[in-house]
Picture (tube, rainbow, N blue to C red):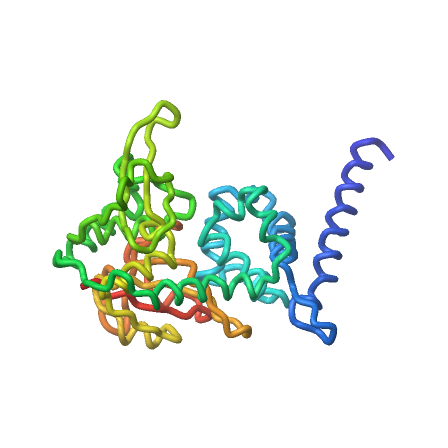
Length: 320
C-alpha cells in the first residue's frame, strides 16, 4: 500500500469516527432518565460534521456556511438533514448562530457558551426579549409617517444589490437590510448619546441607527445599534415604539394576516416549546393568501411565502 492510499484510508477512518461519535450523542439530545441534555458544543459538532461530510466545499463560519444554515432554517432544503433524529437541536444551534454569528464564529467568545445546554440557551433569547419588552421604557410611537411603498421600492432595489458603502453588508444580513428598508420608508434614526464614541456594534434596544464613517483600516466602517441589525433587538425596539405585533403559528395564518410593507420574522417550531426568532423579511408583493417577500442574507426579491418550510412559525411587525 503506497503512502497516498494510506493517507486516504486514514482520512476515511477519521471521518467515520466523527460520524459515529455524532450518532452516539443522539440519545443525549432529549432528556433521558439521568437528566442529561445536549450542550451547544454537541449540537454544533453534529451539525458541522454533517456539513463537512456532505458539503466539503463549505468552510465552517464562512458566508457560504451562513447561507447554508439560513436556507435550511427557512426551507428545510436538505431532506437528509431534515430526517436526522437530532434535527431540532441542530437547527436550534443554527438559529443561535445566524442571530449572532460573532459570538459563535469567534472561538474565544464561543468557549463561554459551548458547555451550556442548547434549549436553555435557546430559551434565554426569548426571555431576554420579553424582559426588554416588559420594561417599555420608551413607548411613544415615532412621529414620522411610514411609507410602505418606499420601503418596498428600496427592498426590491437593494435585496440583491447591497447599498454599500452607505451601509455594511454582513454575512448574516437580514435585519440590517430590513432596517434599511424601514429607514427608506420614512423612519428616522434614533441615536444613542455620544454614539460616535460607542462600540461599532452597540448593544441596545432603545436606539436604532446606522452611522457610516471612514478610517485607515478598514476604510469604510460603521457604528450600529443592535436594534438595527439583530433580529430580537429590532423586534423589541419597534414593539416599544408602538408597532403592531401579530403572532402567526403557521404559514396559513401569516398569509391571512399579512399586509404589504409588513416586516415578518421567522422561528423554527420545535418540541421543546421554546422559540428563538432567527430571520427577518419584508412583504413586498402578492396578495392576501399569496404574499411575496424580499430579503437578505440569501437574497430574494418577491419570493413566495408558500415556499417557506412549514416547520417555521412567524410574527408580524407592522410599522406605523
